Length: 220
Image (tube, rainbow, N blue to C red; front, side, top):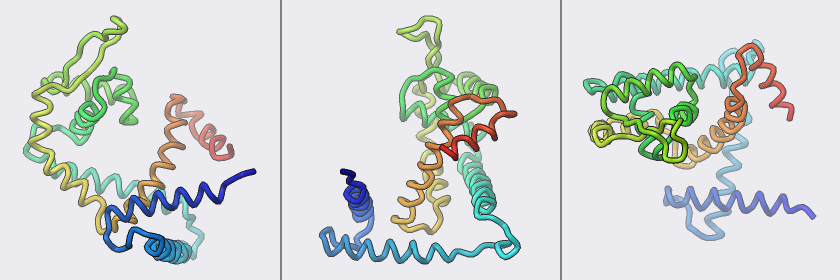
């Protein structure tokens, strides 16, 4: 016997628990859960009526999503540029790489590059810049002497900490006026997309075959 309904209910309860910790709107009991469900599905029903520019002329939802994701990337980049103004950082990639090393610990160059979904030449350029600044240290792996491992240096931690207030401010501004529940829903959707695309990215497919692989993945 399949228990899909039970699994769905557990997932909904997990969402409710996570959102109720951020907002004090709902009571943390069955009544609060029911109110949350009503509100959630009312929003879902409203979402079905979404309109967008060019819809009446045949512009697809996929086109709008792609455009909005590109726009969001540019908005985020402009706020990041403001956050590092006057610092030693050259670009947002500098502090993103440092944050990655701080959060996940030591890793190889390729692991760091893949973690940030970069092409190898661009990633190596960023890493070399961070090493030259003294913000990242490179040393031999204890498990494989042929491999080099990276870690954030004390100087890198210090420089990052000096800028973190502005970086957090930029991150907060990017999320705009979304409510806590909307942020959680957006995380869920973006993580779903990330899982889909990361599986393709990890295959390191040549550009000429990338669209073909993407189409195959959508059909699976």
